[in-house]
Length: 467
Image (cartoon, rainbow, N blue to C red; front, top):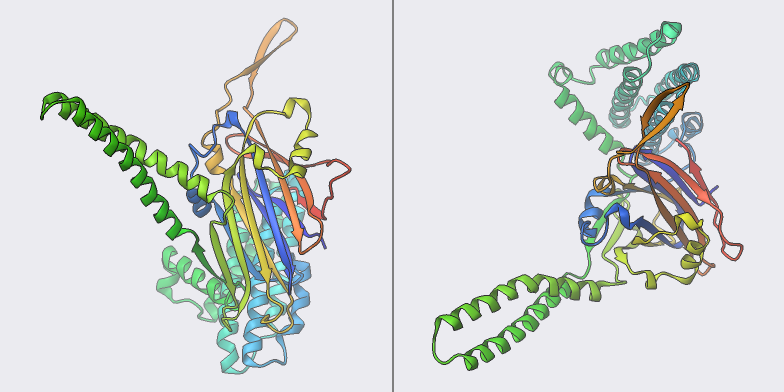
């Protein structure tokens, strides 16, 4: 099993995922090298705002089965258990079922060949239909268990229907594959009728898109109960920041007071010149006060973690893991030697000045407190590059060519290359390194490729999912 998976999640986002077992002590560093021509830096991008708006993580219990054919193996866990165990394993299966459908649909949407697309869609339809039937054959008879089953059944039925309809809505329509389209629509109609037959949703809910959407969102949260870990995020350094603000204000006022005393000595009595001088002094105070405070705060904050996170089991409230998170723009001279060595091996045309955005997450997983039967948690972190893209230029250049005396031209897009170096530290093991090249323009990520490293640098197991 690869330690790290890297994939393009959407047009302008990247997702990193990895698994950690009981007792693991893992540190993950991501260094984004943003060419200065992109116009991104500490003066244009606030790290704290970027963290809250563009970095989304999810931590949950992990079990094999992220695609539909593998999920079927989890059915054996639904039988002959207590109510609490049944609910936990039911939620785990339903959650993995939903994630598997999402993953397979995203892969399906990346297929450009029409024939291949429709054959893959038909296979997905068949897998979804068989899995739903097999799931329903395990319906419990005990009323205590049945309510949990109905919630999961209602959500999975609606979710699968929505995902298939969404795929068809954006698919290339062709009469050559009308039979496949009809089979997919038949499955969707049958699922709608199935929910009506079991009275899962009221007439008012079905007729109002807002109500049905919000209800399904609630059901999704219910099936995540016990599977997705509860996160308690706490910003660090609040008291230190207040102290820095007070110290900066004191220093500025010290300078201002000295200037006022000198001004009073230079002018005899209360004159218009003295008033104007004091106005200028106070004006400069307001201009430089925030700059001094921000400069001091960056100096003091450099290298310190910005947030702490506690991961709890939502059922038992036991602490499963603790994390520290860093996010900051850093200086070239503060880079680790190995990272600098990797950068030196870039092609000469790619050696451009860059701003360095550093993301780091250190995780300590507890030895105990896991739900019975599970020893692994999965962390998925999604980085949106949309805040980067808004600073990029649109392509304005044109390429001209001549064919048989006729001159034509084509517009070309402006592309940028972001270097990403990932450093993985597991316990006391030696650090391992991976370098990626992310080629992007203003609207999408063109490609993500993994680059060769110097022979002296270790590389961990990793995969890139090309989607």
